[in-house]
Image (cartoon, one colour):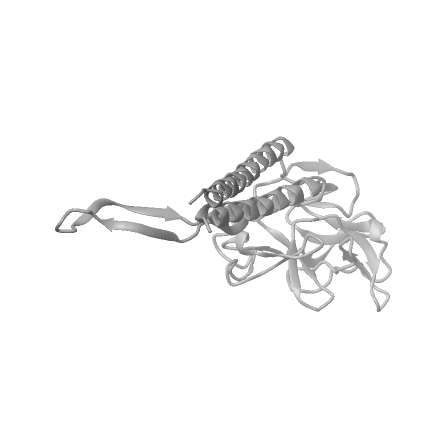
Length: 272
């Protein structure tokens, strides 16, 4: 069987994955805090056809003859550039400006991270009013505790500052600090975070351990903007161009398979 059949097939498989990634980007163009993804490829093994000359001494050739055996997907990289800040005027919406991530507690009790600050007030099993994600997962403070509204205080009285500290307004209009702030974390390699459903991210060995802002020297603090959300950083025009490129590459590999099949048919039909 001709190598080109297998080689072109790997190209079609890789470009299908590329198209899947582009489609996911476009489908999340309006997802709060979503970061665009890019498929990266790597070449497969090379088969050495000839390394020595055909002269009598059989010396090594200056340039050998090798043929590549195709491509495969190497990684899907996330681009963590800042998304645009969009005003919502909803007091439980928060946008981050910087490299930080909110911390939330999953249903399995583990801590996850997100840039999606589309929060709301919710009731937990103990009747406390807590700040939660759209999925109902509790948002955590810098100590790993849930962010709660104190007893006897209205959720409308809660106050959040641009540096993430939390308080509430008393009956006289004065702000009372709760000695509590958002748990905002950074990672040495955010591209290494594992993507979960619901805009959640899980720390991995590749991402490094989460670093809490305020407790790690050298970290630039992330700004917290109440009444805003961070829009997706997907550029629709770029994704449409990438889709056309992926389609053309897919068609070229398909054409290579068709041509290889035609050549095999010609060889099989040769008269002896």
